[in-house]
Length: 354
Image 1 (spheres, helix red, strand yellow):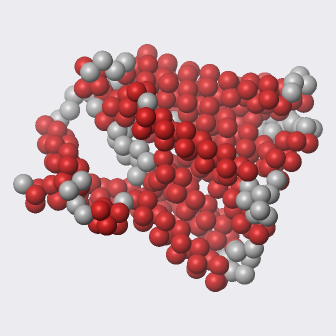
Image 2 (cartoon, rainbow, N blue to C red; image 1 turned 180 degrees about the horizontal axis):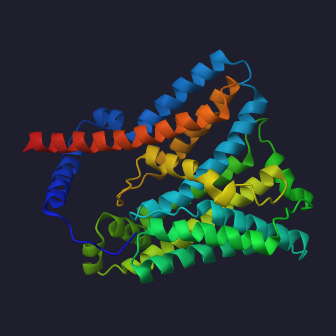
Image 3 (tube, rainbow, N blue to C red; image 1 turned 90 degrees about the vertical axis):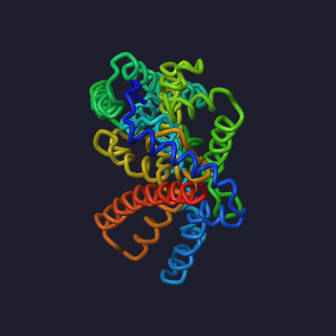
């Protein structure tokens, strides 16, 4: 999500080859296309690891663990969405965790100190998340600097300002309906938080598939210069993506507050860094291109499900938290390498078809 840069001739040739591969992709038989999709691979892995964990640990398939897994997965899905909507344009938002914590603390203050009703407090938290996202977007567009640099800086600024204003005090005396929603069970083990994430996923899918704005986001990510020549206001699109990212980070934070029953400054770790790994893992595993221009909302959702399942299952085996994080980091590296291999395969198919 940065200022358009000159494209090297080798990169242009690579993109042309990739385009031929994508065209040939539609000519493959439907079963072959299905087997080569990220989504099919993720569903297969979710089923395989689910069977392994269910057979290997007696508590994995219990109603309580499935409910706990669903709540954790719902939040991870939303965190992944908050990064996905920025990655789709070729950018990054390292401040998703900091924005989320700011939104959560704002909601806690509005409920506990200002005494506002729950709907107004939620609206205020989401508005702040969107406003902080807008700050990121405007700074990126106006400065022309890489989104990595801008959001790395604002991550510290947002988190530090929140700590200074709140004096690092948690808000624990929240209305009982907040935690009641997080503890609610449907059919014994389904969390309503998971339903919220699925509904948001459907809305994002409709955005990218059915609306001009969604197509502009994809166009800006695929090739900003060409999109600008086509009449797309690329800078405006970048800002909107960051606003949407901030709102989604706010939703994730509200869901986390509902799960814990309190708004705590450390809920996303120092500077919000605990959210970065799940923020990247879901979209990248799901097939969202880091270079921009390609998105899979379903893939991002399934990627977050897979990550949460692996984390839960490994902890059931009593593997230390450090090793869980190590395996997740390796999984992210593997996902990037698989994306490169997939592009290479499509390019090879395209070259063979000529």
